[in-house]
Amino acid sequence: MKRRTTASVLLGTVLLAALASCSSQGPSTAQRAALPERAIAALVQRAGRLEVPRYVKYRELDPSDRMRVLRSPTLQRVRAGRSGPAVLRRDRTYLYSVTARGSVLIAEKASFGTNSECGHPNLTGAQPARISGELNYDAKRGAFVMDNDSGRYGFQPSRRRENLEAARALLAAAGGVRDGLGRRIPLATRWIKPWNNAKMRRWDRVRPLLKGAPQGFDAIAWRRAFVAQMGYRDVPLSIEAHTVSELTASASATAAAH
Image 1 (cartoon, rainbow, N blue to C red):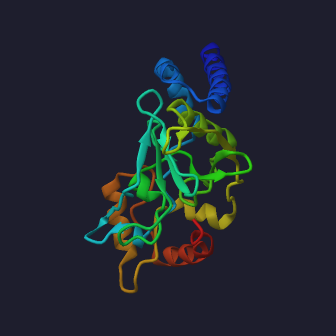
Image 2: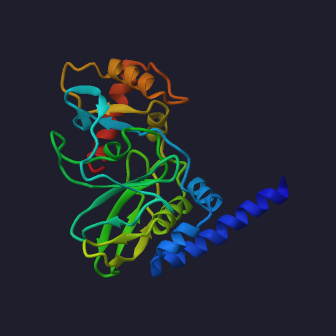
């Protein structure tokens, strides 16, 4: 067992180093195809534990079915060895999330339909996800910078810097980022220390909450039905009304920016 664990650690370390090189040089189609599945699986695990989103905003729900989360019309899904690169514009801000199987979901952080701004649940459908954050072009570095700036998935206490580096490596292995003319754009990372205080830990125990619901909307009943429908593991169906009020109020200031 010890020998197998050591081998797994070495595989992950070597793979991250190799893909760091690929992200700066731009992996070819042949390189992507040659990446072994076990290597991809190691990267996926390094991208972080699956987490339920901390909250869902009312505006992110489908107006015709409040039990369904809207999906962004700009959504791209890339996966190492199974897709081409993500195509991004330098003048746009993007959100990304890493799925259970290692796909990298990317969408513009922009309004669509009745939603005034795309949130990470509009990428994932509020499914559990690994590390998530933003992609912004930094002209000084000449690169798209990935961070963990997500109040839903990226600031969970379990998140580590290596999760962000694995996300970058997964995107690089899928072909990285190109512009509309097919020109490669390098990838870089920026780590933001996750929140870790008493209020946030209480909040984590009862996720997801519904934020921004109109007066008269039964957010507690919605949450119970939504949790049951989504089949979240280790998430209580019922919570007390005062818990919703307390945590939603404490979250409002930080949630508005994410």
